[in-house]
Amino acid sequence: MFFRKKRNDDGLQVELPITPMLDMAFQLLTFFILTYHPTELEGQVAAGLPSSDGRNVGNQVGIDDLPKEDPKSAIIVEVRTQHADEAGSIVFPITVKHDNDTKDVDSMKELQRHLIQKHKQVPDNPVRIVGDNKLKWACMMQVVDVCQDAGFQKVGFGRQE
Amino acid sequence: MSGHNSDNSAVPNLTPLLDVVLQLLMFFMMCVNFVAGQASAAVILPAAETARPLPKPDAASVLFLNIDSGGSLIQPDGTVLTTMGQVRFYLNQEFTDANRVEKGKGAKILIVIRADEGTDYGKIYDIMTTCKQIGFQKIQLRARQKAK
Image (cartoon, rainbow over all chains, first blue to last red; front, top):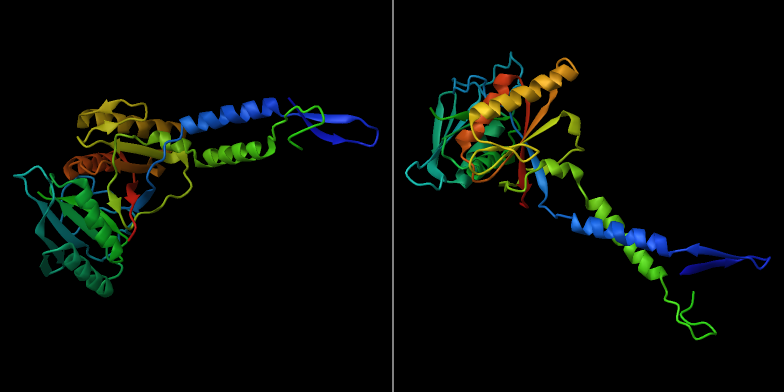
């Protein structure tokens, strides 16, 4: 099939072949439809690596981009789970430690309120989340979420001994 | 272009069809993400409200670590590394290879952790600690973006 494009003044008919272009367009379309896998929107969460020896050492936060001379002490958030069941969900209370101040919180809302208060006092301090081995990653990410939502951008990890 | 001529032969109007086809083609071409090939479909990411949109990927300096619900590391070619010894060997090899290409490049590699929401934290922590011990310095966690 030819597509009649234009007839110029000399009566010469110019024809544009559409069929091969349409064939190619359909082939490409089929390829992209078949290889299309819609995935959920993925986002990034910034975090720091744990200390290289893997131990929970005092206030060491395990974030590399903190300057060495930074005297600020980390806020420690201790998250526990129940080893008896396989669910790996968070068992309250979650303990928040900072210098000599220790507070147990009984819900995620309370943790968020407490961390928002802390962020007003010490906005530049890092947070180190110390979790149980059996804690599920989704639960750990909830805590990371709350920390970042409270305003803390420097979040590192530790493990319960 | 008309649908009828004087010989009573039907000529289909291809212009709107072609428009639609080309628009669909453009949609699928824009949506295709070849970098997603490094992401394992076996991993269901946890949801996070604070997850931010991804920056423009720089595939040369990114190492994807897909961790399944059992804590095994899935390599881009599909090989599953189940023991920490295998994981350490793999990470060491990647770090050494990067340094061979350019001195100090290994430390600049961004480790992207795509861990399944059901993975035990202890296993992810072990892998992160191994990364640090080998010499990697930058890390990024991946999560599903969740509306607030």
